Length: 212
Ligand code: CO
Image (cartoon, rainbow, N blue to C red; front, side):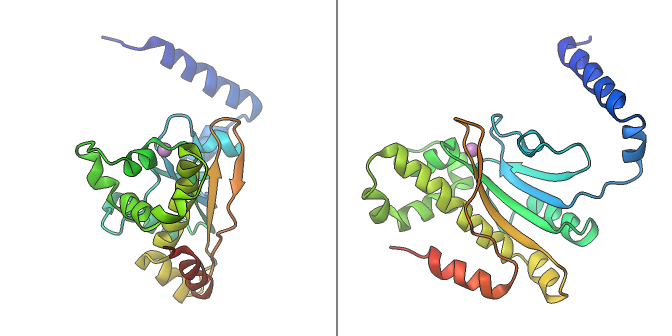
């Protein structure tokens, strides 16, 4: 049984349009990819990585999960990271959060949400550490948006502290890690100016990030 024919129809139109603009596009991609970027973003359907930055297939290596988290025990993320850094030799890793993130919101709530609370545990801890400073913000929306930014900073630190990035820096492979945030409300991507490309910059960011 064939299902969801409209999606296959869309696929036909998509690949035809690309071939019209770039004859041989897919053939060229078949044998190699050489993306310069690794995007670590939220799984939220409103935050489509390639489209936001206008990149074509082959230009962006992507890992997405709920709340764009970097856990040191996440073999899925670590495998993506190792391949991107060691094999593809990406030069930039961007951790991309977004305002109004449902995962971050759930981590700030006092009621349980089941299994996902385990995944969100590190965001919950980040929230509890920053609760006093967040309480001074005018409303829940502002607190959530600030937490989304703090979460990006935390994940930039987590990426930089992985064995994969540490080993890349040790062998002096050029590799920058960036913290960005996306607004679902207007489609705008912003740089949070959290970029690190050395351990000294990482230590400075860590020192700035421990509040409360
Ligand atoms: Co999200």
